[in-house]
Image (cartoon, rainbow, N blue to C red; front, side, top):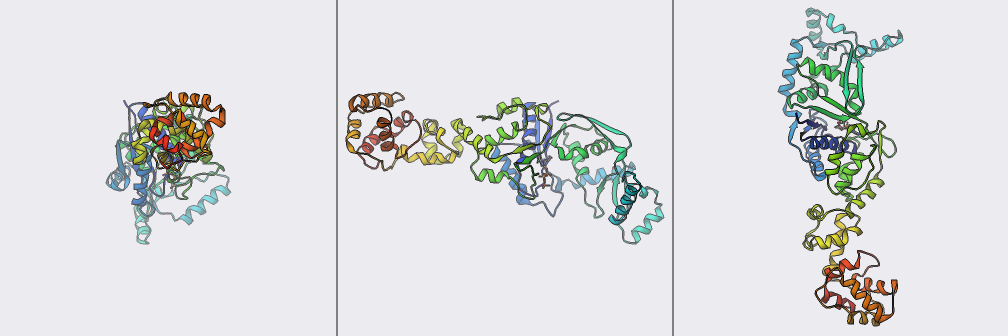
Length: 445
Ligand SMILES: Nc1ncnc2c1ncn2[C@@H]1O[C@H](COP(=O)(O)OP(=O)(O)OP(=O)(O)O)[C@@H](O)[C@H]1O
């Protein structure tokens, strides 16, 4: 059966590179195995989630070139969560509790003082109907706990290997707060069941919830999915990343002109057994995705590494990939122009800077006129091609007696008005004979 995976960010900020790494592992896994990818917006927290962030997350993922087969929003699914809640209550797996945070804290401290684990004692289960009625009459609202079954919960994690959590040492988790709002666990499991998620691929921040979630899947009559928990990505300083703090956002990288393929190449390979190297399509990353090759230590994200990789990516970027991001003038010059200039660009947008060199107008930089007049005299006739530059400079060397830098540099200055740049052999036919002649005469052309 083809896998169905999901990426489930909360729209409480812009995506950071850590979120993106988890997103792209999901996407790569789905594409590698012919499966599908669900984007699920965890927007049940109405105070912190915003529509602007929900849109921004989609924009950021689209900028990366990531598509999704299905989009879901938790805020539209409360009926499903309420249904699951009612089934759990009917099955006596969800029970109301009335303790205040202060009472719980007091009990926790007392247990610790006695040298016992601070596990919730299920006192609420011993309340009679009359006790509950009295508490409610006092104005107390219940929060709801999920009754864990004792013993080990085991799963084979695709990234971490065999795992187990002893649920006897855990407090029954609260699934619904006293104000009636759901914590993360129940909506997430209900969605995973309803969307037939086969593989939950996410950050290690969720490992500790997994035992409870597996029990919840079973309590709701479903088989748990396969899990893969990947190490969290850290900042270069070793600090954790957070959407709410705005750390290392994809939006910033985009504004800096970072190449999306470089983001993929770095995040898919960082901290794995495979070398980080530029790619010119997603295919090698799709083919190579393998959670067993991801190291167990948290990887650190270094922006300068990304910048270097981004430049190397641009240098090898096929025209078809670059074209949609070129301005009209650069795009209209076609593949030959792109192939000539790409090796000299820090980012795709910089191609625009080379358009006047090819198309004019350009004020040439000319040294004394004698040499350039000789150059004009031996300029080969049309048609021009890849070999023209070599033929021309050979003839000019013979004519002028110059060689090396003294031969080539004045030509580059006259024809491009720059000290450095793309190979002249490639630029020359793009500039064209008439414009070359004018520039050799020192005219703006
Ligand atoms: N540093 C990280 N490295 C890798 N994955 C991460 C990292 N931080 C979060 N994730 C993953 O991103 C997905 C979305 O999580 P979530 O929306 O809670 O992100 P968050 O950055 O932790 O959010 P917030 O800062 O708003 O709490 C989850 O699968 C989570 O495991």
